[in-house]
Image 1 (cartoon, rainbow, N blue to C red):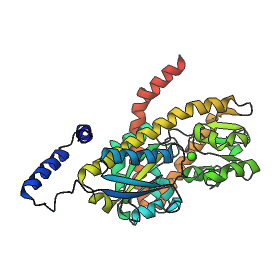
Image 2 (image 1 turned 30 degrees about the vertical axis):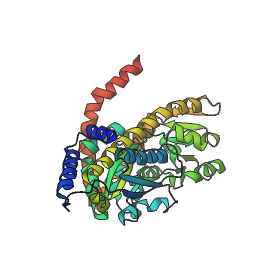
Image 3 (image 1 turned 135 degrees about the horizontal axis):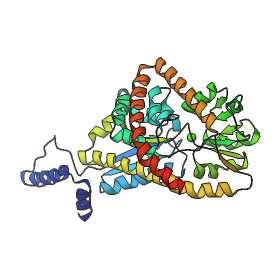
Image 4 (image 1 turned 180 degrees about the horizontal axis):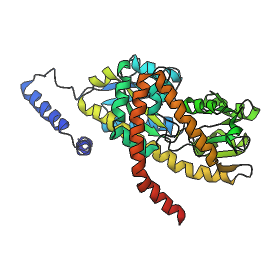
Length: 371
Ligand code: CA
């Protein structure tokens, strides 16, 4: 009971008080109103992810989410988590949730770009927003409503549930001094970033995480991006390439998603629905904080390796990539009205957010740097 009261205080919810009143009323009248949710029922859910088993931060965060949800619901919502391939192949996560094979999934919206091109805005857009901007857009600027609308035809409800922070531009086995150095470059870089590289004359290559190291080491690819210092170090990419470039212009704040089958969600009593929502918000913050915290030490270790040079992409290269990004996004918008709609909303919020960021975080970080 103490645990329950802790939860009441946490959620500040009158729903739960309503549930208590209902319980005492049904005790005396011995009748159950069919319209009232059953607050004693235990829901056993399954959740699939796009991540390998034990994948640090990503899969670990999802497992933590499942434990949190079970604790917050006092054992009424149990979520059994399956890593990619354990129940369904990683890239069938969306379909499995959509069809109700499982109730929940975790992955990244840009994996579903083949189905919903505009979903890419909900994960990573080259020269888009960082975690701070993405979260503001979702929770305050209408982004989450657009995301819900986008997944509605698939019977899927999305929640932002993780952010990698600004990624690194990647590992290159030659120096990049001008945009011409990208011509003919074979690079593992997915999504819109890959399309931009192609515009610069490079060849984007699609490879799963487990294939990257060997491809780079054997020279099948000349460069690769992965995530950030923590995951890049674990993959051993510093043993296969020397130049480690920043910033991750192509993935400035990659968002991860929790997706829930719409009917399954509707079957939950309101307090459990709220636990899912708040659990996703907690996961969103937890993952971002883990990335930020763990990248510090890994970057230090990578920078200390004698064969590794950590350096910024030249401003001229970034300016050209930015110009090519605008061309790419406009071309994609011409192909798909839904992409266009989300692009316009994203662009408008990003511009407003940037004006504020310039004189808030931007100005403040400049100040610290100058010290
Ligand atoms: Ca990446």
